Image (cartoon, rainbow, N blue to C red):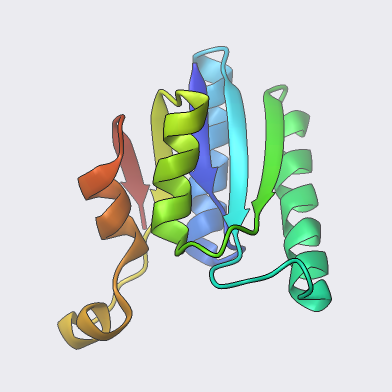
Length: 130
């Protein structure tokens, strides 16, 4: 089983990471942890370094649970939701796990919702955790 996790280092993402590791263990799967630098370019060295650190942490948590893990830093200039969906299509992912944060309706309208985009456009089941 291929499990995809969109990881941004937030508390919700940490909870999703722990759940992904559990599912990976239970289903003898591989966890793909990705981080999307929305609007980023390959020249944002500080953002890239911080993202690499977060991905290394996530990989160590998953592999310490005895689960195969791959990490990917996506710098394609896409919003995170689109990056997650596109990666899921490219890798033929079986399940996506994402953390969600509570926002007001106005906040969702102004800033969009990565989780909403993924839920509505993913090619596979999506598990959300908050």
